[in-house]
Image 1 (spheres, rainbow, N blue to C red):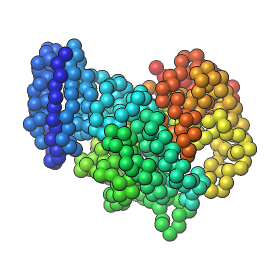
Image 2: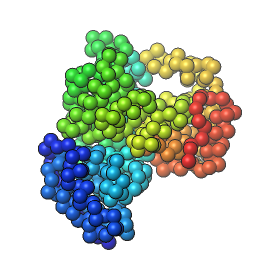
Image 3: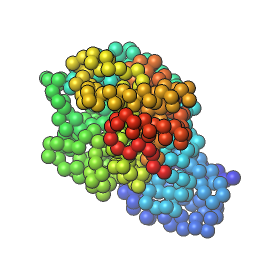
Image 4: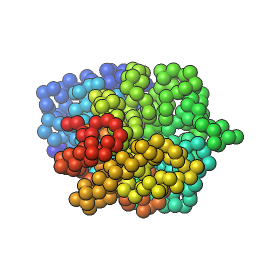
Length: 448
């Protein structure tokens, strides 16, 4: 066994691809004969080169046989290109496997966790299979609120999730019109660096402070995106956002190519660690990838809304992008605790009130599907909510699922999904239940 320690130095403006061509690829030429002694020049080159990485960082690579299993968190993977994307020799030398290979964890901020993790594409971040979704904790009084929410309960829910091993939080500037980000920041105050989760947020939805109930505008203007990033950094009380995503395609006339260039620039500048696209289609993802790497996508995906399985999930798998899916419990419908009476009693301030999924004719089929998950849940000693979330994680392209909670008890309902692996008979029974109830649309069984 050979251990190589590397030290990476911090920022100067330099193109990643040029760095690869000029410095790293020549050092790789000896790798083709499988000689471990040729690994040292790779790290010597990195040590000697001022590349736009984010900080001094020490990591270790362990050479085993003909491959190398890397235990880095930040370091090389921050550049995107330095992970070896597009260069199979470099990719194999640095990572020793694809994005779903599990590796030992080191510090970045890589949070200490006892839960299984999966790498988010080529970002170098290793995520637990479930992340805390912070939409509902934004509170009431805006267009897509879930109703009023107690901030103390929200902080307790986040802390409980983190204490239970969940190592990432997904929020957005628009959730509570900035309030969700503030609550997330409050929940993380005082946490040791090793215990701080990754924090993901989104931009591109701009609201009118004078009319909180008005629909947010889908805006992609470069100046607006930059203003939003600075506001999110301030509310989150951080110097860099781990994953920043465009929430929805712009509707203000800004071409995708223009706003995605801004995201790429923000990554180069160190304002954000990685960049992604939420709610974008395949053609948009393809266009964006020609400008800069799409590190992650975020589509809606659950047992009711399954269309992403033969759409953007296929794109992400082909392009080795990370995928974090949202609404895996269909906004509460698949928890096993939701009822027709509860749907009828949703308050006007809750966006779900009157939504087609929560009214006839879809509601009875949706609730029947949730009830059909109970036998599978009983076999594993978990809740239907955990089964619903685990079903999304059974799809190979999915890195993790964003699961919301407003109280610590709700976290406990879905947390077992972080370690639950559904068996073939489970998936077969679930597919049969989908067919029997007629709920939703899209593929019913994960592809190989």
